[in-house]
Structures are given as structure tokens and as C-alpha cells.
Length: 213
Image (cartoon, rainbow, N blue to C red; front, side, top):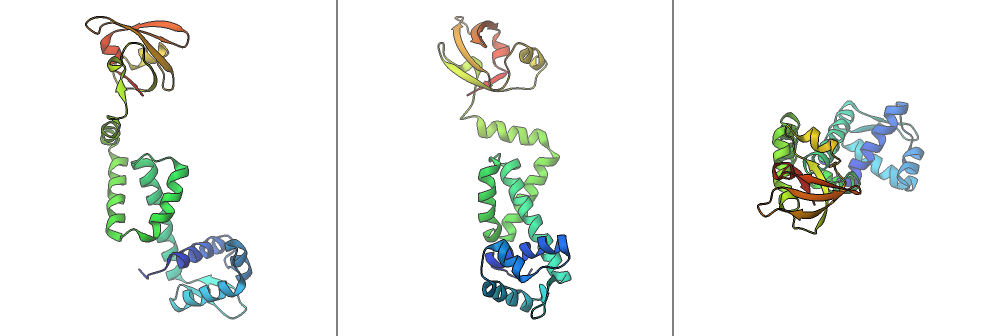
């Protein structure tokens, strides 16, 4: 793949977007889109022409070559996978991931990129393993309800999959609900809690399925 600087990649993707809508792009439109001067665009266009990525005659329209189209598609695919890796694989919030992805797009080595693609695809095809990964990464942050001391107030994160999951959800122990441990029997069974304004008694095996923070 032809080496492009970060700025050159941005120009290429901008031109690709414009030519996808209108078949051709104009210097004026590119300058307006990137909020730069016309001479700045002309200089960037000249470099992309030399790399055989675009075609441009003086005072004419800007068009991508076949190679330029394939290169732009490859860059877009790279952008998509890096963002998916951050949001889907690592669970980073989208608003943060978008900024991080932009930083990674231009500096990430091909070897590292291929690795994150493999890992993301692997998790997509094996959701049960992804769940194990999420649980492992959360173990220092989250606890089970049966591990919470008397008098503590926590928030439910999720209910673990089990035959009693539906029962627990119907009792009001849904993700996001605030719950307070009121009393724990000497052997840890049962556990009395309050949530949503009412008292609830849970067996230890039920409380073990409620993950809280």
C-alpha cells in the first residue's frame, strides 16, 4: 500500500466521499469541506496525483483513479475495524472511542491492525468467550450481592445467566436498580434487602447471581 501521511489520508477520504455522491469533486468544495485555502488544496492534490491516486487537470474536476478508490475503501475498512475493536471488543464508550480511533488509524502498524481484526472477529463468532473476557475484566470492579456487607447500598449491573434469571428479574432486581443490604443471616442465608421501596428476602444462591457495583 502506498504510504500516505495523516493529512493525505484525510484528503483522500474527503474526495472519496464527495465523488461517491457526485462522481467528481471540485477544488472549491474540498477546500470548504476541510476549511482550508484553495492553494493548500491544490498542493495536496498535486501530491496525490503524483502518487497516481487521483486525476486532475488544471481548472478541472478531481476524480479518483481505480487505485485511489481501492485505497480509500481499504482505509475506510481500517477505520471501521479500529472503531469496532475499541467499542465492541474493549467496551469503550463510542464518544471516547471515536477520538481514540482517529489517533490509531494513522500510526497503527499493519501487524497490530491484523491482530485486532482477528481478535474482534473471534469475539464476534464466539460470544460466550467474549462474555468470559468481560467478566474477567470486571472482577476487580464488580461483586456479587452475597459479598456485600450489611448496610451497604449498591447498584445492580446485571443478572448472570441461570435458570432463575427470569425469576430474579420479575422480582425487580433489574440492571440499574439501587439495592441496599439490610440484614444477612449468620450463615449468609437468607439475605434481606430493600429496593424500589420494598423489602425482599433472597436466598444465597439467588444473591450470587446478582452482580453489583
